[in-house]
Length: 145
Image 1 (tube, rainbow, N blue to C red):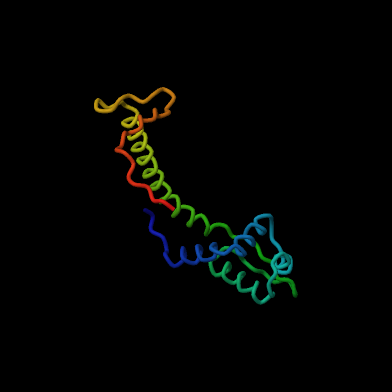
Image 2 (image 1 turned 90 degrees about the vertical axis):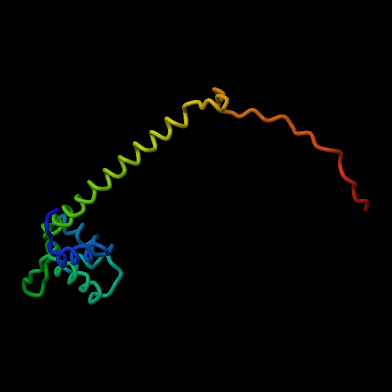
């Protein structure tokens, strides 16, 4: 496995763990926006929203630039590539594990579908034939009311 800077990956995954921040990244995927444009769709205070932008900037996922009184943000997607490569490594592991599970279940199904010499074969319809009722002794004494 490729050696990653764990603290940088921690920052990226922490930034991506919040729906507001993922929404900001999706919006910036269409092009740069001002902070005001980004904040409009979220029902939160501007200082609260600015904290989300700070997390994204610390992770290296956005860059802010100031033009007079207007602050613009733009997406820097390169750090997400490191996270994607890290995830892909484990995707290969889980794909292998799920393939092995699939083979095992297929094998179990094949075994279950083969008739056993000790069991009568199942009917083609798959329905079971009811067993004849068992005979029991006479009823015991009944309670009178």
